[in-house]
Length: 467
Image 1 (cartoon, rainbow, N blue to C red):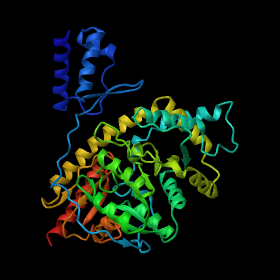
Image 2: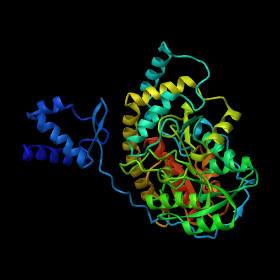
Image 3: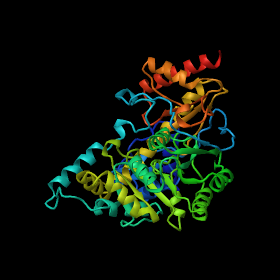
Image 4: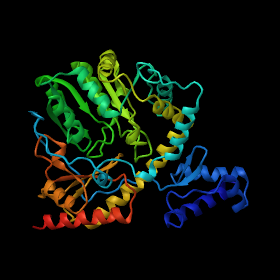
C-alpha cells in the first residue's frame, strides 16, 4: 500500500508544481478519488494525509480538501533593515492629514480582505438562525458581552494553544474600541505611551486624540530593541506600552516568543501595563497561528485586544479584550462609553464559530493571503528598481516598501490623482524616519485591476528614484 499511495501523491505534487492543478482548487472527495485511481479508501486517505504532511493539501471542515503550495519565505528585493535611532518623547498633536475613507480605498490603501474572501453566505445563515431562535431577546446583554460568544471564543483560542476563560473576556465594538478603552483605563492626558517604530497610523491617531505623548521604540530585523524599551521604562516615566507582536502593521514582521516573554516580564518588573493590539494574529502566512504577548503574562499586566475585523469582516464591529488586573477599570470605562455591543451580531458570531465555519474560513483566507503575498512581492520585485526594498511579512494584510530618496507622501498624492490610493510612511511615525517608505494593502486577490495599480505605482516610483 505504501508504495502505491506515495506514487500517486508524488504524481499530484508534480501536477501542482507545474500548475496543472491550481492553488485553491478543490480536490475530489475521498470516495471519488478511490474510483478515479481504483484504490481502497485506506490508500486514498493515506495519500491525502501524505499531501497534507508536505503542505500540498489543506482540509476544510465539512467541505473537503483544497490544493495549496508549501510555504516558502518570499525573498525581498533586498533584506529589510530598520533605522537606528535613540528614543525620545514626542507629541502627537500634529499628525499628518489623512483623506476621508471612501469606497475607492478598497484598493491598496486600507488593510482589509477582498470582498470575495468574506464568508457572507455562512454569516447570513447564522444571523438568520439566531433571529429565529425562540430564546432570542433584545434586552440588555451581560456586562462582559454575550456569554455564548465569550465561550466560543475561549474554546477557539484553546485550539491554538492559548487559554483564556470566558470570564476574562470582555466584548467590544472592534479592536480599536478595545484599545481606546484600555488607554483610558490606564493613562491620562499628557502621559507618555511607548509604541513600536513604525507604528500603525490608527493607533497614533488615537493617542493624538487622547492627548498622549509617545516614545517610539526602534524595530529590528528580529523584533524590537528591548534595551531601549527597558531604558525608556526606567527613565521616561512611561505610563503604558502599546504594541503589536504579531504581523505588525505597517511592516508585517513579528516578535519572537523570547521577545514576547521578555516584554511581559518587563511589564511585571516595572509595573507598566502593556496594551497588545493583536488584530492580525490569526492571519499567519507561516501555517501556524502565533502566540500573543498575553500568553506569557503571569501577573495580569498585559491588556490583550483583538477582533474579527481583519480576519472575517470589518462591518461586524465585534472585538474583545482580556484586561488582566485592569478588568474592573476596563469594564467601568466601557460602561461609561456604551452599555454594550450589538447582541444579534454577537450571537450570530458565536454560532458561526461553534459550527466550525470560522476555523475553516481562517484556513481558506490564510491560503489566499500566502499566495497573494508571493504574487505581490514577485510583481514588485520585477517592476521596481533593484535598490528598492520590499519586506516579506510573516502574516497580515500589508506590505512595507522602502523607496530610497523618494518623498512617498508626494508619490501618494500623485497616485491619488490617478485613482490609486496608498499610505505614505510619514503616517506611521511621529518622526521623519519613514518618509521614503510606503504601505500597501495586499488583502485584495491579485487581478488585472490590482496589477494595473501596482504597475502605475512602480512606474511613478521609478521615475522619482531616477530623478
